[in-house]
Image (cartoon, rainbow, N blue to C red; front, side, top):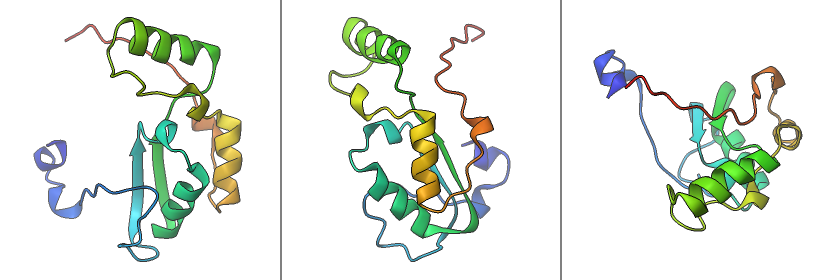
Length: 131
């Protein structure tokens, strides 16, 4: 909706697919890939990152957010949000699949990505009460 409001919709295309199998797209098909709240659910992260790297054009950008594997993330996302408050369905998250910034940085670099770790901020939950 925001793209339409800003007149960008004719320049964008949104595609939903499996991170494990992007074979319907050729090599270097995309300028950017966005993986929002995805990485912490992937069982074969190396395979998914390999597919993403394959479909990105040279100079393309991978934008993602994920949950850092810390004690605090376990308490907030699983013990509190998932189990106690039931804000997400049971078994949505598996803490073992959360990935630390150093692990993700190394994995991305192994797949040919340039990594700017200055933008890895970890988990910084917040609540916006202004609405």
